[in-house]
Amino acid sequence: MTLSPTAKAHILLLLASLLGVLAVSLTPGVANAQPAVPSLEAAVAQGGGAEPSLPNNAGQYWKTYDLRPYTKELKTVDRPQQAIVDWVLRETGTDVWFTDPFGVLNADRSTLRVYHNKQMQEIVSRIHERFVNGTTETQLYGLRVMAVGNPNWRTRTQALMRSVQAQSPGVHAYLLSKENAALLMASLRGRSDFRELSAVDMVVHNGQSQVLERVRGQNYVSDYKPVQGAFPPYIPETGELQEGYRLQISPLLSLDRREVDLVVKCNIDQVEKLSNVNLDLPLVGGQTYAAQIHVPQVASWRLHERFRWPSDQVLLLSCGVVAAPDRNNTPSLLGGGSSFLGLDRIFAGNGQRADALLMIEYRGRASERVDGANAAARAARATSPLSRGRY
Image 1: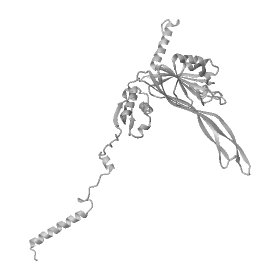
Image 2: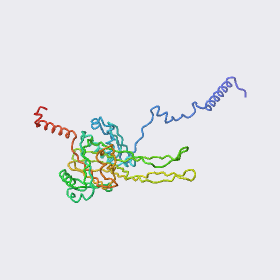
Image 3: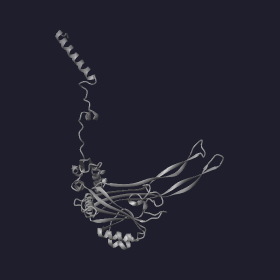
Image 4: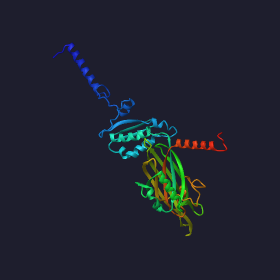
């Protein structure tokens, strides 16, 4: 069959068009290729990352708490919001924030952020209220440290005290009225084995922690290391032990200041003695070199507990017969005399022990105590025959 020139032209144009389409389809990165899925990095760079949905299978919801009414008054305190987080964890426990159901607890100086169920939110709300709507003034707490050689001091004073529960092994806790506390002190001072080591006033912001620490290092020879080119061919290796005490209190008042929550933490480490051990170190020629190392005998005691009591009463802790730094025959942790709180004088030398007592009393606002002392001083000056009211 013979085709006309026009038909031939149409066929050639059709073939050219088909060849062009085929070439485009075989070329990578052109129109027929599937569109590429953008990477996560590209999505984040373009601001396209979606916020994850938080689990709410246990009825969790998000809530923020304003901390500024509390933190703005504590300008000199570093990270005051940490105390609020610590008290929330003490009230709820730590496991509820790291196990099911899913929860979030985060704070900065102005805001506390919580994601949890209704029960946890209510607990957090109560703690938050005690900080924000409670007092932001500094409070005064009296601490008295004592030691009694024989724990039978309870025989004549048991009727003055009311026993309360304590979780730490060997620790007994008692509550006393302030009048009975005075009678107890009079009874203890009448004993020959009683020593009142220290009586101090601690100024603490509500909810914050106050730390008292006195430690020192004690060096001893722990081993001998061989060396070349010296005689004797050994040099001693020394170790160091830290002994002393670290006492921390964290008090939190109720809104009406009628109740005190107190977390007390005390660590005491005592090097009772260093036992001498003789060594025979080998030398050339079958001889030996006589050396000596020390093996430390260490006693430690730990207290970490929370107590709650009416603020008009006195808390007494009997820590039992415990270890404490012995400084009767050696310089104190401060160099010459007794260390702060007198804990270096709790026990006599030669490994003797005594019943250590800690008495804690809430004494009100620190400003009231200072104002009262100033008023008493002004009254004394006014009635002094030397001042005649002039100064």
